Structures are given as structure tokens and as C-alpha cells.
Amino acid sequence: MPNMSLEKVKMPEQDPQVRNKNFDEVSLGYTPEQAMEEATRCLNCRKPFCMQGCPVGVPIPEFIQHVAHGEFEEAYETITRENALPAICGRVCPQENQCEGQCIRGKRKGAESVGIGRLERFVADYHREHGTKKLLNIEKNGKKVAVVGSGPAGITCAGELAKKGYDVTVFEALHKTGGVLSYGIPEFRLPKSLVQQEVDGVAELGVDFETNVVVGRSITIDELQEQGYEAIFVGSGAGLPRFQGIPGENLNGVYAANEFLTRVNLMKGYEFPNHPTPVKITDTVCVIGAGNVAMDAARTAKRLGAKNVYIVYRRGAEEVPARAEEVHHAKEEGIIFKLLTNPVKIEGENGWVKSMECVEMELGEPDESGRRRPVVKEGSNFTIETGTVIVSIGQSPNPLIRQTTPGLDTQRWGGIIVDEETMKTSKDGVYAGGDVVTGAATVILAMGAGKKAAQAIDNALKNK
Ligand code: FAD
Ligand code: SF4
Image (tube, rainbow, N blue to C red; front, side):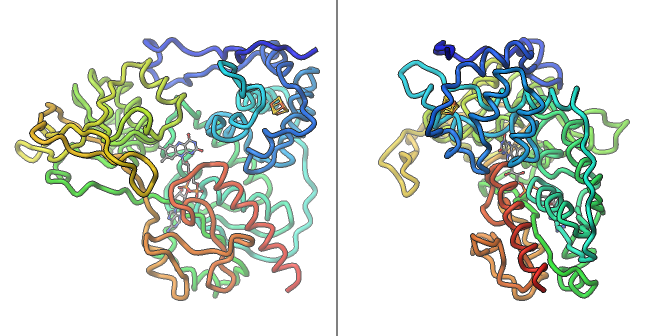
């Protein structure tokens, strides 16, 4: 008999007033008993809508039935047939818009879907602690493929091709692999040891990682082709921050969110001068924007000791783009939301930020995005005293690769244009996927693109 409880089994979490002072993971994961109890809420539907919501088609009811019967290794094998990074996806996928958003258990008013993400995370963590590693016997085919970028798109593409026998080299601009999983998403949401383990798993398949190589500067795509790489996959992400273009954005104390998070996650800026890259945190920190990146920056600033951390957003609560769970966690940790508020000027003293002038907004008619357009309330200007401003209003692809690769067609906003079936670009032998194609999106979509490209590269090269 299925368990007809309307609510998910609660997942233990650190207390908000404790966790907002440390970088340990917020959510602690299910115990085997909790996972089995949650799994019995699944109806094992004949037509599982949840699977239609998963961009990589994980056999959801099948793995959940294994969990319900305590067959955790079988559950792991079922998930990893389609998803190579379940420990990461279980933690960061926006399940409420994907599998869980389609689950029929969540359709009744007041009812919650099955906790698919929590179960996926449990299965991956259980396997990490108790599972045995299977050694693959890979026969090499002597063909070389290059991958640009070691984010989820790049590592998925590299892993899939290595399993098929290709000699794969990943070129990564930073000194650390993992892309946004390492430099962007903070430790308290995604432990870095876990990301490292996933990258190590790909390296064990024989993939070679070359860090500190900026493709387009250290070496170009054309030069890689001359070196005998028969296919190249570009998964270089969308790391170029956008700014509002208001006065004062070049003052000291103004950071792009990605730069701020990189300084903290990768360069341990909070341990300056023991680590050489400083990060300045003042009593009050304003974060402009309300997406997932803004939530990560605000919650990081709080953990670094800021007393008042404001999310400053020009639209209302209903338009906040961040995941509901991240907003909930941020509020619990004491982040203050200043909605319907738009910055117009950042003011400084001796080159450093001193305050930020804002205006109040109200919502007018819907704009081209379907959301109600924010309109300035005349005469509503006010000032927030602050020493740190973190701008988090979006990112686009870095122009370096498109500027140094003749024959590579791109969108006006910089995204690489691909054939959606094969991820092939306009340049022969060059494929692309992830944020560099879609603009800032999600981990699972980047992984899906990496997997699709690997299949297309294999189809093209094995017939060559
Ligand atoms: P990236 O992860 O950006 O990786 C690209 C890699 O390419 C980087 O390592 C970069 O250094 C490297 N690179 C760039 N240019 C070059 C070059 N010229 N030569 C060599 N290497 C190069 N998504 C979710 O699903 N859930 C979340 O909770 C979530 N939270 C996020 C939080 C933050 C702070 C950020 C920034 C993003 C978040 N996202 C989230 C989005 C998600 O992380 C991205 O959609 C995903 O990482 C894109 O993967 P990618 O492989 O295309 O690019
Ligand atoms: Fe289980 Fe929900 Fe999927 Fe049905 S829709 S199989 S209840 S997870």
C-alpha cells in the first residue's frame, strides 16, 4: 500500500542561526529509513509524468521502487544509466520545475510531490559511502577529441567519449576543474569534495585535464585542429557578468556576483592575507538581483560576517527567479528582501563604495517576457548606507572564443549557434553545448547537451 501522506518526509537541516555562520552543507540528507519511507509515497504510475519533466529521462519510478525495497545499489545503477552526476543533480536541479513539478502526488491542493531530488541525492550518497566501483574495460580507438571547459557540459561530454574509447583532453582556463560547480555554487549547497570526486571519476576513465589553458589565448580552436584533434566540443559556459550601467559601478567594493563567489570559493579570499586575493565585507551588503546566483552571493556574504544583507530587486515577490527553496533558506538565514526597489547610483568616498541610491518601483502592464513591467514611483528616491555592492543581474558567454575562431557563427548576444539535434556548430568538427549555447541555464541542461554532443561526435568519427 502506498504511503498517502500529503507531505514529503522532512530532510534534516542545520539550524538557520547556526548555518548562517558556517560553510557546511545546509541540508543533511535522508537516512536509509527516511528514504525508504519517502519512496513508499510513489504510486509507481503506469504513465509516469515525472519522467517527462526530467531533461535526461532518468527512470524515476523504477529507481524509487528500488529505494522502497531497500535496494540502494540497484537504484544507483538505474539512475546512472541516464545521469552520470546524481549527487550533484540531487542537490542543485530545480526539481520543482522539472520531475517534481509533473509528479501527480503534488497535483492535489496542499499536497507535495514525491521528493525525487532528495531520493536521488540519498542514492548517490549511499553509493559513495557503501558502493563498490566497477572497473570498465575500455578499448581505445586512437582518435583524439578536445573539450574546452570543465563544467558539467564539458565533463559529461568528456566522460561519455572516454567510455567509447576516445583519447579526450579537457582544456580549462582556471586552475581548478568543475566550472560553476566549483567556482560558483557555494560549499554550503554543493560540497567541493563531491565535485572533485565526480571529476576524478572522469579522469579515471582516462580523460586528461589541462588546467590554466585559456582557449583563444593560450591556443586557438584552429591550432587544436592542426594538432590532430578530430572533434572539439566547446563547453565554455556563460561567465561574463552583465552590469546595469549606473554611475559608480567601477568603485572599489562593487563586485560582479561571479567574481565575488570565485574569490570566496576558489581563492579563499576571506582568509586574506594568508591567501593573496582579498574579499571585502562590510556590515551592510547589497546584492542587486534575485536569481539563484544572487541568493548564493547574499548567503555567502552573511556567512562572511555581514550584519545586514539586502536582496535589491526591481520586481515583486512573484517574479523572483530564484528557486523557492533557495529563497526560503535565504530568508531563514536572515537575508532581507527589498523588492520593487531599483538602484540608480552607487556613491563613493576615496574610491570606495559608501552608499547606494535607489528608487521604489510599482508593477505596470506585462512586458515582452509576460511579467509585469516595473515602473519608477516618481520622487521615491532613498539611500542605503553600504560598503559592498554585489551585482547579480545575469551573465553571457565570454567573447574570446568567438573572436578567435573564424567560421564560428554566434547569436547577437554571443551564444554559439548549433544544430539542436547534433550540437554541431557552423565550423567543421566543432560542437558546442551548455550555457555557451543557451545563455545562463541549468546544470542538467548543460549535462544533457554534453551527452548529446558526445553521441554526435561518435557518430561522425566512427564512420570517418
Ligand atoms: P560552466 O559551468 O560555466 O563551465 C564552463 C567552464 O569553461 C568554466 O570552468 C570556465 O572556466 C571554462 N572556460 C571558459 N572559457 C574558457 C576558455 N576560453 N578556455 C578554457 N576554458 C574556458 N544551475 C542549476 O541547475 N542549479 C543551481 O542551483 C544553480 N546555481 C547556480 C549558482 C551560481 C552562482 C551560478 C553562477 C550558476 C548556477 N547554476 C545553477 C547554473 C549552472 O551552474 C550552469 O548552467 C552550468 O554550470 C553550465 O554548465 P557549463 O558546463 O555550460 O558551463
Ligand atoms: Fe512516482 Fe510521482 Fe513519478 Fe508517479 S509521477 S511515478 S508518483 S514520482
